[in-house]
Amino acid sequence: MAENHDIDSTASVVVDKAYHWRPIDERTPRGPKLQLIHRPSGVANYGILGTGPAWWTHWCKVPTFDD
Figure 1 (tube, helix red, strand yellow):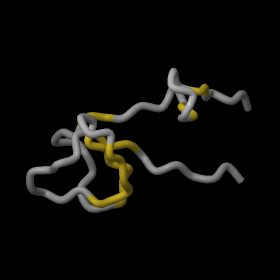
Figure 2: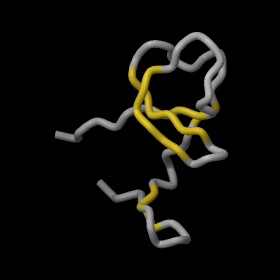
Figure 3: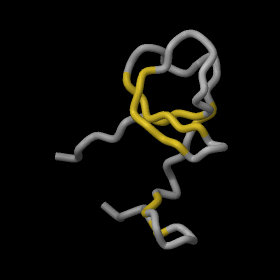
């Protein structure tokens, strides 16, 4: 399997250019663990998104092991 990652422009982060943050909207899963980010501050975390207003702006799936 070909790798699909690169080093960002600051040379400080390895990124996957095919894997993107998704905006939080009405279809965002509520209750299970997600990766969450507050884009303006750059703070990311694993957590659970509740039903009320969220500080988080975007989410993405948690990766799995390929074995």
